[in-house]
Length: 161
Image (tube, rainbow, N blue to C red; front, side, top):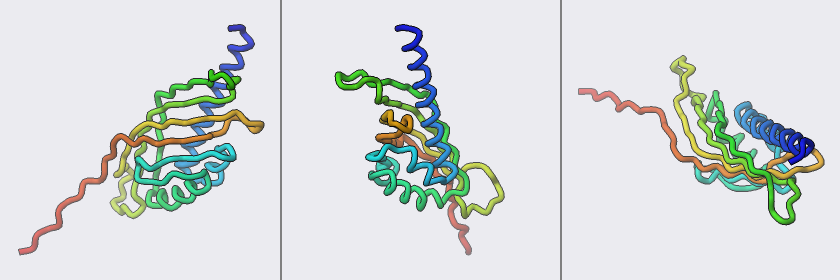
């Protein structure tokens, strides 16, 4: 590889990493306009493994706005990012795949205990498909593979004699 190619690859890697971070921030902050703007025009997302829907970015943003409203606090931690740039016959490096693990602690909005600790935590793996556009890298596909979740412990109602 020449230095020019290595520099271009590094710039793409940083841009892809920034896009994934912007995705997490948009979901955590409930910025659904920003969320939709992260996607390429035909971009889709699939949250079915986490009990959600599959659809275009607008449909999924609507579903997320409704379902994430249950939580007063959300914080995605996206780690172990594995980035692979396209090497298919017709691909000139304008696509990328990212596989990344996530842990997502959240706090229910109606929890009145005064605690700021999360009471719902889930984790799994994201699979992102990206496309280089005139506006930069955009999401072509997001697939969530939820692997586990921990719900709040429910105490049994008191028995009255």
